[in-house]
Length: 116
Image (cartoon, rainbow, N blue to C red; front, side, top):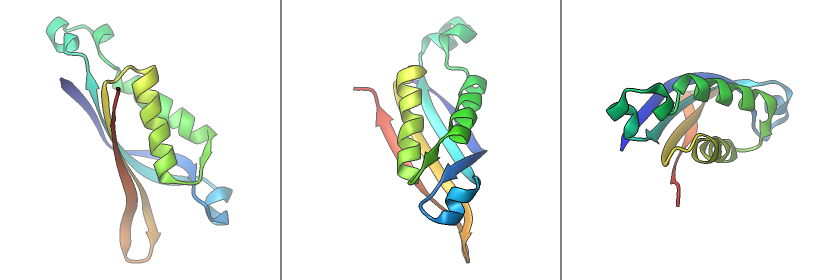
């Protein structure tokens, strides 16, 4: 299986349980790795792969329109998009809130899922 990765993408999202987090979006750092069909490399054809530009645009749009209480839920939502809508066979995501606590650079989650 071949993989595409998107590393350290910054996104604006509404996530959190505190009032300050519900009042305004915050910048998250998101990294995503997902499997793509072997046919993409074999055929050298864009229609045989998952386009990272489309994935990035879709994630930014979706996260800009929704509120999630937990990073875990946000991560599962993005993984669902990748598995169900984009057809990825395997996805790993890392999501971090940046600078939310004094002396802590990032706090986040990592989730990995595959289609059954």
